[in-house]
Length: 261
Image (cartoon, rainbow, N blue to C red; front, side, top):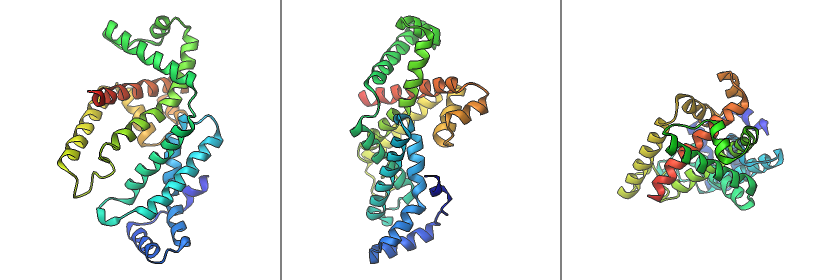
């Protein structure tokens, strides 16, 4: 799977030239060259959503689905709409992988139930204590040991990445705001919704603690794994998992609250 990252990336000029050749001739070898050049998008998207997978085989399935979606992106991409192919493909590929995960329902029901209980307890304690509760306080409120809470929290962290990405995808499907955000013909309604979503997400990120913002940045934007982040911050992987899970939960709650209201 890693060989894709070794394939040289195309410049915008090279991409447009090959795309034009493929559109004119339908030559599959040209299309395949385009797909392989942007195969890293499928890899990165799969790694960002790897928390939904229970096995390495499922991660491979994610990459394969990403490559299939990438082929469709090449077939349907229209450079005249003013969207960069990379941005268009990232949105489509992530969406394709999320749809596959949703269809196959990889996340166990037990994890979903425990995740819901933890979120409800966390929010309840936040209201009662007027501050962020500790792991010990959450565990005591749930009537379980701290060790069991840590186990639940770790499983929850693995699925949090997927569920947050799924929420972002659902938001983006509201008028295709995110996918079409650079188009000249964007409607006033879409622009308002897009601006509101940016504002809500920015506010949610601003409300995170400094460490939560750092973990979110390193994980989602720098594409580092939890092990690498743990080394950078000199803490355990479990601690990073907790921070990531808590941060994603806060962002999800903020965005869900916006969508409900």
